Structures are given as C-alpha cells and as structure tokens.
Image 1: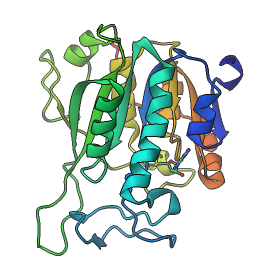
Image 2 (image 1 turned 120 degrees about the vertical axis):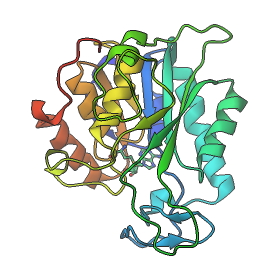
Image 3 (image 1 turned 120 degrees about the horizontal axis):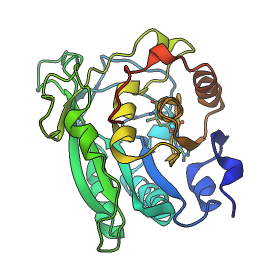
Image 4 (image 1 turned 60 degrees about the vertical axis):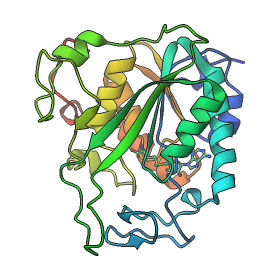
Amino acid sequence: MQIEKSLNSIIHQDCVDGMKALPDSSIDLIIADPPYNLSKGNKWGWDKSVELKGMGGVWNKVMEDWDCMGLSEYFNFTLAWLTEAKRLLKPTGSIWVYGTYHNIGVINFVFQLLGIEIINEVVWYKRNSFPNLSGRRLTASHETLLWGHYGKGKRKYFFNYPYTKNGDFAEDLLKKKGKQMRTVWDIPNNKTKVERKYGSHPTQKPIRIADRIISIASKPGDVCLIPFCGSGTECVAAKMLDRRYIAFEISEEYIKLAKERVEFTEPDLFVKGDESR
Ligand SMILES: C[S@@+](CC[C@H](N)C(=O)[O-])C[C@H]1O[C@@H](n2cnc3c(N)ncnc32)[C@H](O)[C@@H]1O
C-alpha cells in the first residue's frame, strides 16, 4: 500500500473503501465532518427555517440521502469509518470530528469502544446563528467537536501549545492573547464571498475553523486525511498551511466544487500571517 500517489488529491470514492487502501499509521491528522444524520427524507433541497421534529429546532436541513440513516445504520457506519481512522492514525497524530447532539453521542460512544482517547470536547459557538422561528425552544447556537488520539496508553499526539496561547485570534471575542485557549471557540459561521466563489455546500464550514484545527494539531508537511470532503474547506486550509491532504467524497458535484476551490485557492482567503502556526 502506497500513500504517495494519493497525496494532495480529492478522490471520488466511499471513504471507508478509500481508507482501507491506505497503510497503517500513515496519517498525522484526520478532520472528519461526517453526515450528522439530520435529514428526514430523500428529496434534495435545503431550508434554513425548517424545524426537524424532535431534533431540537432549526438546523440547516440538508435532505440528502447521505445524511439520512436509521440509528443502527448510523452506528455501523460510524464504527466502520472510525475503525479505519484509528488504524491510519500515527501515534503522534490525532482526529477531530464535527457534530451536533444528533450524532455526537454516537461518535463519542464509538471513540470509547475503539479506545480512542478524547483529548478535548470543543464547543464551536456561533454567535450569528439563525433564530428559532417556532419560539418553542432555545436557539441552537453551537456545534461540538471531539478531539481524540489513539496512543495505546501513551500521549504522544502533537499539540501546538504556543500557537493556542499566543496566536492571532482577534475575531474570537472569548480568546485573550497570551492566555490558554479554552474549549469554547467563538468563530462566526458566515463564509466570505471568496469562500463561496465557486459555489457552496449545504454544510460548508468556514475556513477559519479548519485553519485553527490544522494549526493546533499538525506541522507543515504533515498528511491530513479528510474522509468527508464536501466543498473542500479542510483541503483548502491544508494547502494554505503547507500540509498535504487526502480527501474522499461520494458526490461528483461536490468533488468538482472542492477541486475548483483547492486549485484556485487565493491568499486573501486566509487569515493573516501568524508565525506561531
Ligand atoms: C458534512 S459534509 C462535509 C462538509 C465540508 N466540511 C465542507 O466544509 O464543505 C459531508 C460530506 O460527506 C459526503 N459523504 C457522505 N458519506 C460519505 C462517504 N461514505 N464517503 C465519502 N463521502 C461521503 C457527502 O456527500 C457530503 O458532501
């Protein structure tokens, strides 16, 4: 199994199959933004204002097949891709997984089943979140990230502590320069015009959050695995930060978008220079 031929590419393949073809302990950082299992139907479309019954209010309803599974199916799917992720991680590497309460419990449970130690649970606070239209519950205004590693009892994972303490996080109203970074991150969810220049994805993440994750948990030249590429946000950030990446995506439409975004990455898309990265 060779990794070189897959480097810096976005591969049109199911991530579990794709990961199976990669060698053990070959990846420094995994950033996974899996389906949250929010969709309740299989008709394409998305609507910011639709309330999902029993799901806690207004979420960006995706309504795509890839986001619609039964609970057992979602568990089996999570177990399958996280089993491969664990095999691929170097002892010095780590994994970040996005979620909301709809799916993060399953991710947490599977981490524990597989012996992936949770380093931190991060709350991504979205100060500009969309209001709750029904007025029947609180306004959902955060997502969760689980950060874990598989060190078999040892903690060798890379952590860029100086960056977290002294980096430039001017936009984050909760982060004070020179103070330790906390587990609540205030990162606006809005995407700049440049980030949407080639089109958009219903669950596209802002570049700013990928920048922060990559800068915290990897070094230049490291290999990042992106199992669920979507519009390529994490690939763009990896390229900008001189990391290498391997990404998988099942939708041709998003592959096209991601490839364009990566190819035409522009320096002004990104956060200003910060030596501590
Ligand atoms: C939550 S989105 C990722 C969004 C991404 N972070 C961005 O900023 O654009 C998840 C993506 O995973 C893709 N996907 C779903 N199941 C997959 C699988 N088994 N293998 C690879 N990609 C998959 C979907 O098509 C979707 O584009």
